[in-house]
Amino acid sequence: MSELGTSRVKSQEGGDVAFSVVIPAYRSAEILPELISRLEAVMTRLGEPFEIVIVHDCSPDNETWPTIVSLARTRPHLRGINLLYNVGQFRALLCGFEHARGRYIITMDDDLQHPPEEVPKLVAAIRAHPGLDCVMGRYAEKKHSLFRRLGSGLFGLIERVVYNRPAGLKSTSFRIMTRSLIETLLNYRTQIPQISPMVLSSTQRIINVTVEHQERYQGASGYSLWSLMYHTVYSVINASTIPLRFFSALGFIISFFSFLFSVFYFFRWLFGRVVPGFTSLVLLNFFFGGMVLLGIGIIGEYIARVIRELTGPPKYVVSETTEMGQLPSVASDNHV
Image 1 (cartoon, rainbow, N blue to C red):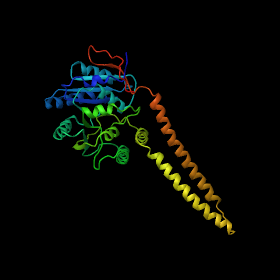
Image 2 (cartoon, rainbow, N blue to C red):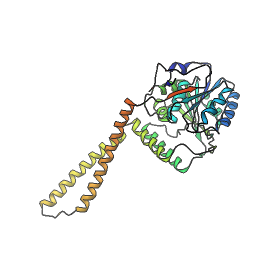
Image 3 (cartoon, rainbow, N blue to C red):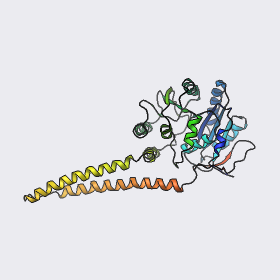
Image 4 (cartoon, rainbow, N blue to C red):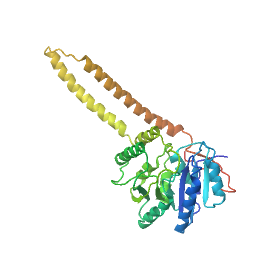
């Protein structure tokens, strides 16, 4: 059987669990044993009940899920969730949130660039400030490639403008959140979720704590330049109508100056002045034609978004889990 979404009741069970660590996994069979070993050592030292939820995002390597199953056999605090098809990191995280039972939820990547030994810093920060909803790790020095850093910088600018991100706050995927914030994120019904923008839209009670950022353990990032550009552009379209307003304002400005130019050239004609300008006419046609096509393309993206939201498939489908004696079943509350 497959599980479409999951029941919200499941995320509220196990209230005695203090921390849930949610990790989306993709092509990480070689990394997971060390990651889990180091993470469980750190969580054990915290002295409170914890769980580790690994969401396998349908890797094509046929090795990651068997590795998760093998690790879960000897670790009662580890739960693996196998998705039926690849849905991307953000949807996989939402799946983990739905299954997490902790009072606090920690998110981290599966590539060891987020050192497990830095988790206590997040825990200490959110415990020291009871009014906070989220603490995000701020990297002392990023170990990303140049184009990845440029993409992150552009995305950060968009977050400040579109999502009103507090000045000086850095958004990262290494964070700890309260149960109430997680429940708020689960109420979003968008087909293409983006966790950091959703967090910024839900609360301003967020701070940073400085953490280390290490080199990738092995392999390369699953994000290509194209995918980073796509997520950056869609983050604007997904949350605001700024592009449409921009073209509305641009159209008004162009219309105003076009009227002034028309008056100017009319008087030149009226007084017998020859009005050359074939080259100018061609360039203007190219410019305005390109702007019209770009505007139509942006409107098309909004229309496509509406179609995806109305007719899109489930955000994820759970194929199987590692919990012994528990078979997946179709949930009564699907978040699609």
